[in-house]
Structures are given as structure tokens and as C-alpha cells.
Image (cartoon, rainbow, N blue to C red; front, top):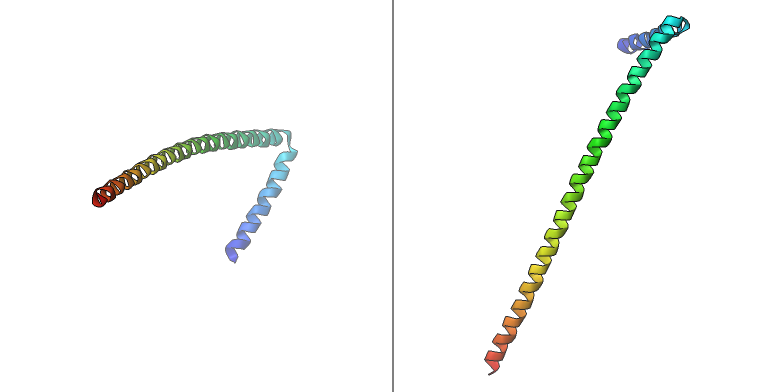
Length: 98
């Protein structure tokens, strides 16, 4: 509880100090520069996030395409095997009836 009180006092003190610094033209300039740097930093982080997101989306799309191609190939192989088995069963049945 004591730490929370100190945190709240520090936060309030910081706001008061920033208010007084902002009143002075030099302080206002300083705070504007700090704000510009923070904005530049957050813009860079956002750009990097978007770039990584695009990379991940590309990887996922490639994986989906590969999985789809694999499923298609397996489906075709199973269909061919079932057809071959049916033909073999017909041939065997024909030989048994002859």
C-alpha cells in the first residue's frame, strides 16, 4: 500500500512538473521535441509490426497452399488405389466365376 502511495505521489509530481516546464517557452520546446521523438519511435515500431505481420501472413498462406496441394495429391492417390482395388476385385470375381 505504501508503494502505491509513493507511485501516486510521483505521478502527480510529474504532472505538476511537466505543467510548469510547459509554461516556459524553452520547456515547451523541449517537451515538443520529446513528443516528436516518441512519435517517431512509435511510428517505427508500428511499421516493423506491420512488416512482420505481412511476413507471417505470407508464411501462413504458403503453408495453406502446401497443405491443400498435399491433400489433393493424397485424395488422388486414394481414389486411384480404390479404383485399382475395385478393378482387381472384379477381375478376381470374374476368374472365380469362370
